[in-house]
Image 1 (cartoon, rainbow, N blue to C red):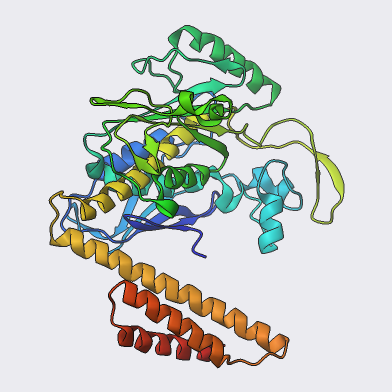
Image 2 (image 1 turned 90 degrees about the vertical axis):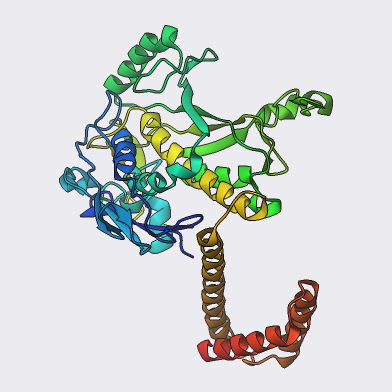
Length: 433
């Protein structure tokens, strides 16, 4: 599984570790001769970088992006774009004491169980530093989102919660309530002095979004947004509209009734049936406390020996200020994908490049499907050999071909064409086995 790739509007593959030489991303499916948004990408990285606030990690990185390929004289060439950000303030010595133990709340234990190895230097790929790639890639889609306003702000940190918003009030915590901000800062300073950390809740409101974005069943807009947000380290839950409060509502209370001028309410947060309604798209997600804390905790070593340890190094008291720019980046990627796809099935004006981009994406999906099929065929072959089962099963092959022909007929595709492809795939699969 290509777990470090996102196959959406732009195909992106991210790479690099927290304390490796660099973090980077390769962006494919890029239209040629487009202005490369270097300034927008750098601005987004500046918002995300560490050391920019009182309650974030003091690690000092300038996070200057370097363009390695795919751009010439400020314009895209149509070739893959590779972006790099070098790690310049990594302190591997701060993590030496962690190389043989599992930190509570971190992915060390689960990574080790899966891969039989883990990078103790700040968590490697599980570190929040991997999000540089996401933020950099999102800068490529800003032009698609023109006219859409995305507000993202904190509504809860620890015991502090607000329902009074003022988006004009700007601060490092993205806290929208000026009246309670100073008390919140004092609260966080106390937590920082104690060596502990705290979590919170972030709200997102997307305005001026057209109706009709998203697709039924497996490509619902809220499902894609949920996966994107939950893929961010530290995010543990998400809700749309009234969210979990729906559990206490009757249908008469939770339905969004409609008048001739539009929806009367917005309990569903602007998405019904996985498709945008044109209402404000509203959702919230919860961020857990930063797991790295300067307090003694119980854990075990690789040899399963129980020990007590205290985390050293530089860490965030509250990770929300660092997560918000990343969440914004993931929202940009998902929404640009939905908007671009909708252009292909609506009356919006599209050009040859749009059509070619769509078909190139389909071709890529076909290749990915074939690759995965070959890999599974190889596993099936090994399983059959280990269990002394016959390699060929002609009855099953004929039954599968019969089903494929029926599906081909329903899609008005030539059955002989499908059979020709199927025979070739089966032949290659047997070679793989």
